[in-house]
Length: 305
Image (cartoon, rainbow, N blue to C red; front, top):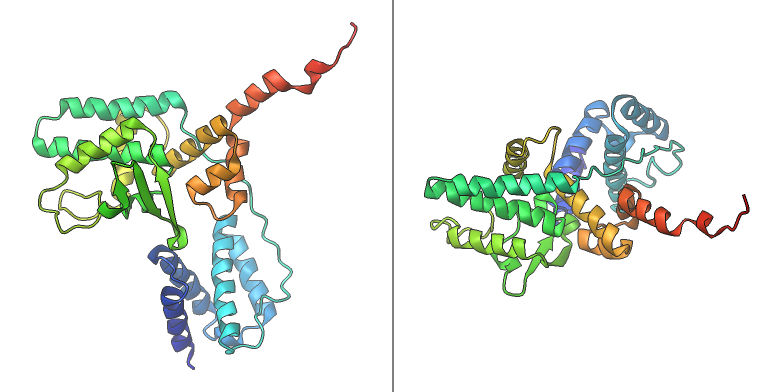
């Protein structure tokens, strides 16, 4: 089988059998194209050549990017071995270890969150046209759902009308790897915001399955959600760069701060690994402050001065 045919067969396998989402498939295509551009015969690569390629990546990219690219290559070579195109993967005895720096999640503090939400509701009060009012009602629903559920922006944009039950206050989320999870929407402001938006949702969008729509009645894009966040952080006169994902970080950190159960937070966020969720344990300074103020072991020592 020619190299190009092997790659085509692999991407078909990823899409149909591994059921990878379009975002992951796109990343795989980019990473494998970069590799094949330098090594046109990937089935003939040696372990030494692979080690040199990984060193090349490490010299040019951040650690997280290197890990992603290497993971894409490992998956490709596992497929080649599985299909008996290769007898062994070039990764079998590679000794290079990629150290991942630990980055704590960026959390939006409560006063800033209050300012952002207030700016959105004030924007609605100033709306003069029906179309402007409809768009702002949608924007508020987006912000409220981001913080009420810790949803990823990609998940929010692909929520369908059937996924959302406002009577039972449940949203069905299709996450990474097409894994489904249910989130109970306990916050009354988010339910009110979603109900308000469902009433003004574009009248010409009856056949559109996605819940959040743009002005043309089509699915709201991830970039549009980023613009919504930027709009209200600017209106709230907040300096710094804020992203939709920071709402997820904030939700997770404050939830952990309250409940203290990292496994519950893991299930709500849809993390596949507890290690990912554990970052929020380290990020919650307020919980640490309360813990050390009330339960520090030094308080139990009886010392005569």
